[in-house]
Length: 452
Image (cartoon, rainbow, N blue to C red):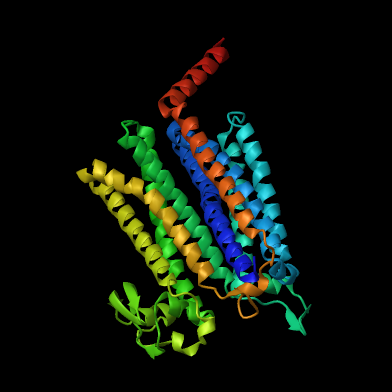
C-alpha cells in the first residue's frame, strides 16, 4: 500500500472513530448536567419523580461512559499510529491539555463512583447532590481540554519553527489560541442541547408506548425546557463561530457558503446544488453572510477567489452546514411549540404525531452533531495543522492501515450493538412503575422499623 492509500485509510479510520466516539462523548458531557439538574429539582420540590430521574439516568450514563472510554482510548492510539509526524511536532506543544483531559476524566470517574455508591446513604440529600458537581465539572472539563487540542489544529501558535526544529515552545499560548473560545463554547453547549433532546425523545417514546405515568411527563417537560435553553445558546455561539471563521479561517467559511467571489453585501446560501461552479436551486438570503461574518449588511466577505486551489477545503462541506443549521432551527422551533403548547394548554401537544416529532428529535440532534463535527474537520483540509503541516505529510506510510480499519469496524459494531442492548434490557426489566413502588415500600419499611 503506497502512501496515498495509507493517507486515505488513515483518514477513513480516524473519521470512523471520531464519528462513533462523538456520540458517546456528547452524552458523556451533557448527561451529568441533566442528572444534577433533575436531582436538584427533586430535592427543591420534594418530588420523588425527579430524584428517580436522576437515579435512572445515572445507570444509563455509566454504560455510555464505559464505551466512551474504549473509543477515547482508540483515538489516542490512532493519533500515535496513524499520524506519527503530526504527534512528533504537535505533541511537544499541546501535550498539556491532553494530560489535563485524562486528569479531568479520572476526577469525574472517582466522584461518579462515590455518587453511585452513596445513594440513600445521606440523611441530608443535598450533600449527596454536591457529589454531582465534580462529576459534571469533570465531564465538561474533559471536553474543554480535548477541544483545546482541536482548536490548536485550526489556529496553531505558541511555538516557532526554525529549520524544521521546534523552539520557544509556550504551552499556555498554544492552549489559549484564537479558535479556543468559540470551539469550546460550541462543543459544550451542543453537548448539553443534544443530551437534553435525546432524553426528551426517550420520555416521549415511553408516553407513546402506553406508559402514561407522570414520571415520563415530568421528564419530557424538564428536558424540553433544557433543550430549548441550550438550542438558543447554540445559535448565539454559532454566530460567534461565523465571525471567528471570517477573520481566521476565511477559506473555510467561503467553502461552506459557496462564496466564490470576494464582495460586499454577500448573501447567505442555503441548500442548492453546485454544477460547473454555478449554484442552482439555492435559497439566498441577501446580505446575511456579510452580517454573519462582520455584523454589517454591507461588509466585504473574502471569497474562494483569494486562495490557491490546493488550499481550498472540499466544497461538499456546504451540505454539512445545511444539515447542521436546518436541524438546529427545527429543534428550536419544536421546543418553542412544545413549551408554548404546555403553557397555553394546546391539545396537539399530547397528540401522537407531535410526540413522534419529539422522538425524532433525538436522532436528528445526533445527526446535527455529526454534521457539525465533519464540517469542522473536513473544513480544515488540506491541513492537519493549519498553515504548517498538510494531512498527507502527517500520515503513516504503513501498509496495514486497511487491516486496522476492518478490525475497528468490528469493534465499534460490537460496542454499539452491545451498549444499546444492555441499556434496552436494563430499563425494560426495571420499569418506572415497579421502581417507584419498590422505593415506596422500602420507605414504608424504614418508617415501621423507626416506630418499633
